Image 1 (cartoon, helix red, strand yellow):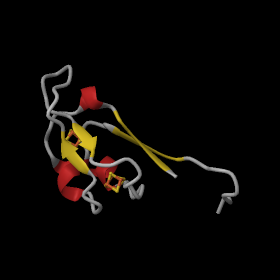
Image 2: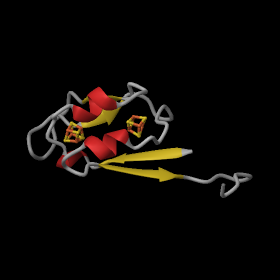
Image 3: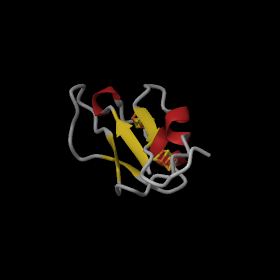
Length: 76
Ligand code: SF4
Ligand code: SF4
């Protein structure tokens, strides 16, 4: 299982991550963060593949991606 963590207060609403996500899983929120920007958010929990493109593109180090191992999953 993939866990995508978004540090919303670092986001500056540039939209690069939204454009690059192959799953179309990111959008700019209607809410405003501490800096006054509309931060990116996931469209749907569980839709992220963990490809890492958003983290690669983001100039503000907003994303952290974790692979959460459940019971029965191997380490391969
Ligand atoms: S890790 Fe990949 S699939 Fe997940 S939100 Fe980022 S770009 Fe989209
Ligand atoms: S690339 Fe980074 S700064 Fe730009 S909208 Fe996405 S999360 Fe925000």
